[in-house]
Image 1 (cartoon, helix red, strand yellow):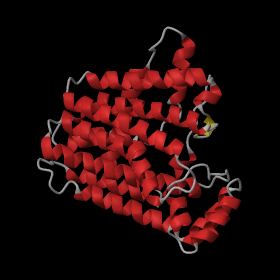
Image 2 (tube, helix red, strand yellow):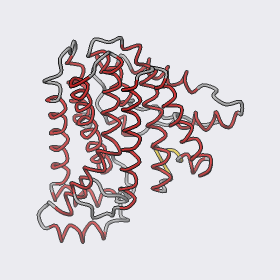
Image 3 (cartoon, one colour):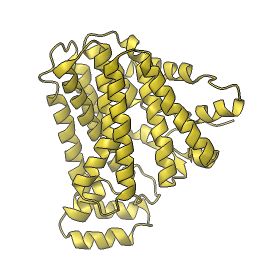
Image 4 (tube, helix red, strand yellow):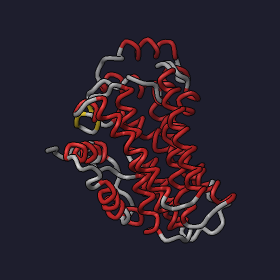
Length: 322
């Protein structure tokens, strides 16, 4: 019924190093197995299938498996948790698209546009609940504590995003990105570590690695909003790139006037303004900084049997568009 589409961003992104790429297929198979025929009604299964039609890099679930492997655990035991993290992430995208009234995601109609608000909302709730149910199978209180904290973080970040405005400062944008995006990356890393038997300070260090990696990922995503080659208007919500242009670049008052006058204009026009203001370069350096912070978080983590795969992961996230 539905044709598979691919986000044009993926074609532009660097491929994972072989050490990371090996787990993508097992993760994909686990996600598909988990979501296969959850309902007796055909339409319900089609809606769920539609949510995962585009594939993707699976950066979040990959971090679960890599974290378990790096810390001496059995990565195959983390596959179900990895699927759970991606399923929860998919649920947050459904809600985000509804709130932002987005009509297209990855080249195809969003869930609420393809079906209805009611079907999108209940499907998103199903996915979030399914993800938590899968994680409960591990019978690990630390795993449940981490995902509970992250679900609260995401909800707080979404509310702050709704209550904010286009003129948000860089620090405000970073705070929201930390809650909405980085928190789930931190929990992904932490859950993989917990499955490997890690606790205490080492668990905190791995979570910090994931959280900083998530910030690097989000900033690169913000950059891609303007550099992915599309000609759609993108000035719908503030991010670190536009906030720098409005508040920290030279001649901010002039930049405010230019951006506001181009809110409904093409991506190309906005890109010229952001390049001239140095905002894209600022964001790239900030992403690199967060990736460096991520790797530094591992310095005091004992028991790392394969640190390189985590270092490679952090480097990939901030270099993925180069």
